[in-house]
Length: 455
Ligand code: TRP
Image 1: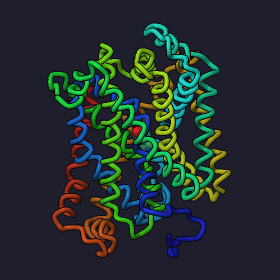
Image 2: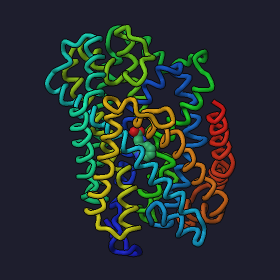
Image 3: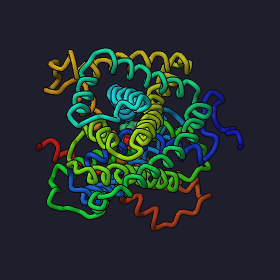
Image 4: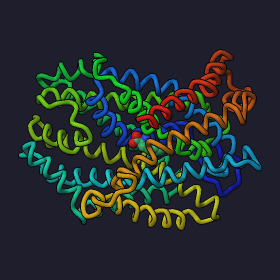
């Protein structure tokens, strides 16, 4: 593996293209795929939702991802300075700062859910679900999330594991971790999907995943699908900008982004195939909502042959998927502190850990003692979720496509996507990509924003 010579020595970088791919896919594949996607599919008409989701991945997700990648790789700098370097003297750096704020908001609540995942893995290992009836499991989850100490322990362990990987750096921490975990994750989810799809009575669940029911589709479905595409592909938050800044000049951006989107979507659909057939086989309604993973699934595991073991590997997968994502979110903030405040990596991780630990505690307590404390009518947890996923990510995505499509312009995009002409990317493909970046993605985002304000 060759060392990059054209970068300042202090900047870490990925060692191989496979490393970039698994790190990007690792960021994308997470709770969004295993927890959010299946319940959204369940609430929004199965395959109909999946088709709309795919449309948004191609029309809005990919252009935003490509734009962020161009910004990061061309500038070789973290969130704010990336924009500043490419547009000196402008105010575009604010986009980077919004991205950093967005990441802080996401990780605050993500770490709490990761903490529940840690707790559930522990319960699965203790075979706590083997005799669970539905009511007990519901109470178990609401009691856990509303209590004070246990979720805080989970949150602390989860955040500490995240920080442990990030402290080791890009090549030695993030890349090495993702290289082992991502293949393992795919193997696990494929195994569970096979188990689930071969359960007696799983047929209706399989057809639910693949036969669209358009009657469940409303304007909300479109909002949910776009939001999910952005959340799942980790867009609009400078995550891609930050990872791309560690990518060498010879990597093929178009193929890396396409592979990331394919891997993420494939994983989401596999997660659906792991969950929906089992849900139907046990006669449970698919529209259970956010409780699906923490209440419905343990209930199913308790009745399924080999369920105890499946529960362990499922919650292990959930934890690993959440970790490969949380490290990417933390890295955005850490890279920002290293570059803007000239901090050492260790000090930056310690600082960000401390801030996020406090915010995460507040999110966690908002299910219990702080449940009456509301900001714009939302609990602290919901507020962070709303500000990041519904507001900042969409604004960040919009600014990224506008910046690349209109401020950097065609020449820079073509130069970057083709590695200054060294890669042959067909002209028609470049034209389609440019059209998506300049017109389609901004229009889709604008339409959704107007929609959301009208709601
Ligand atoms: N994509 C991850 C998931 O599906 C979550 C995630 C990681 C994320 N990095 C992000 C979401 C940055 C938004 C922005 O779980």
